[in-house]
Length: 551
Image (cartoon, rainbow, N blue to C red; front, side, top):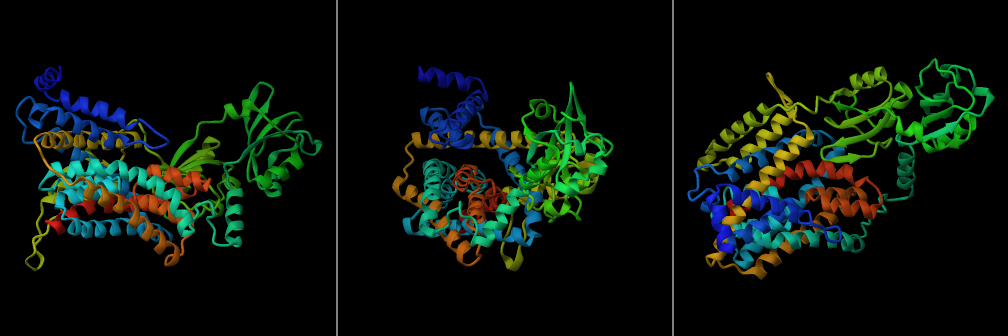
């Protein structure tokens, strides 16, 4: 039966690889107590099993392996996508003083992991490919694995080491987040260093422009008077965005006059809304108002004059009567806290009247380009540029140096994403399209390399399993601990920011979710986003560094 299946998949080129990707993706989504292998981990596991069952790399292509495989195309798409997604924020963080702290803490994790891997490889007598696989698995980093594969002399050992250490890396990471805060006294739920910091953070959260409440107009003092004359923004600090009157929902303007019994939707801080209630009337629940809010418009931050400024200082509510729904930074969604500073290429969702939203867009930057339009040229041309850069050889002082395909693709992605336009070519690639290319690329690559590794294991390849697992666990825990101590005592970072930075350094969204639950706040996402952008670049290089040092 098994032989018949293997033969069928061999007779239909690419069917075996696509089947591995399909089942691997589904396996990676299986969650147990909040932990899953993820698409890459699941695909690698299924690919190893398929290879061990007898499917070969030649069999995936109908009997002969082509010069350029689908996996190699996936590799190019994935590495370029990593740089393209990290580019804007990576450069922004290097220009921000506060961002440097987040980047430094995250970078320490990667640097310590590389140094530790090299030391353990010499101690346990691990070859370069196995050591790089243990590094990738310990960091649960698909970019590390992919970039190392381009230079590894034994791709099968690299894949197997990655597969062995990846699950331990995931579990160890979650356990470390539960244990290390108590051991190092860096509890993320106690983010401030003292009471003054606590009060400042509470004021910041109270200043969130996201709060909306509905009130019933009951005071005769505000009836039939234009809102411009009531001066509610000056008196209470908040504003009316919508009015429910009879069967109609009206957009509030300066000339709008309130009527008794109107239900109004007000936006402002908690204490401001309490003052507003004393002026207008009691708070009520109005489903009609909440269900008929206008769709938010997405605005991309590009104006240098607003970069680095907190939302409190911009005062978009008071000046434009617009509500900030959320802020998107890289892969993370941030709460629009009053103290949140905008960074270049943040995407801000704005709710308000059309003309006022347009004014906000002009001040912050521009409306986000059409999400239904993708500029394929920025990917195709960028990959060409990256491969050419990676093929260049420099010989300083007689030493032959080359970035290699992974380094070239990564650099091209970072630079082109930062530039946004190159002549007639724009970098308009919607988030969903970037995610599809990135995920499909790594799954094709992992599926292909995993099948080859599983087949090598079937042929009798040997590996000292316990040494690889010990190395992987050490790479997961020790760099994190060292970065925690340095961040706490040398950088003097608040625990909530420090843990977000370390999760970013591990490029682990699962770890971030655990930290946010422990902190009962979304605040770690701010430092995570900054560290993640830099770490995405560093972890991609890390695998190559280990291979070159140990070879």
